Image (tube, rainbow, N blue to C red; front, top):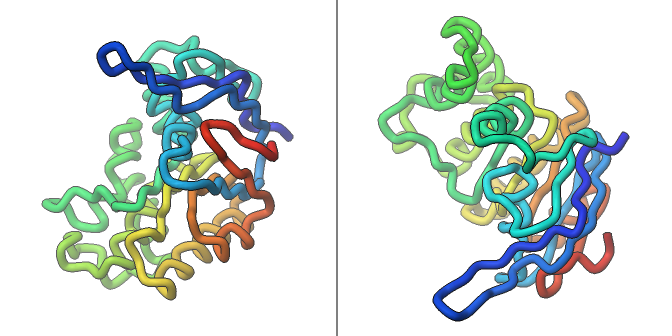
Length: 224
């Protein structure tokens, strides 16, 4: 079943009299439950494309359809609700709040989404236990290793039971062994919960583990 579709997606930025075209007409379809790697050189538009897929940014023109519904006809409030409920984001840098514990960081998206405190806490505890962090619930990010921080970031992305995880170089700040552990966790959630995974990576080994790969060159996907 098709989950996401992009049509004629363009994105450009203006700096004074100069216009920089980042995305140049992307047409892609992503099926529910797919694992998709997006590869390409630095600066070709991979992160911009991922941000638009997750409604963190708007295209200059074109549209993203989610279950056949156009995203960018929505107002900002509805887009924020869509991001909170349907999309989980994992980035190269974990963006955890340093003053909060691992448990509190994972609870936050659920609390923002209107889930009760007890329900949010229960979800967060279950997920942290699933990734082996049951003894680190009260630790703050500065007390965790890089791999542990990224696992917290991953389960924070999962706490609202999203249909899609968008991951932008999630292993780029980790050693190869720890990075592969994070990827195996992602793939496990794909298998067990049928969560669609779209991952930007430079790592060919990681890309080879995905069910599909898209190559981006000069703002275009050449094998969609």
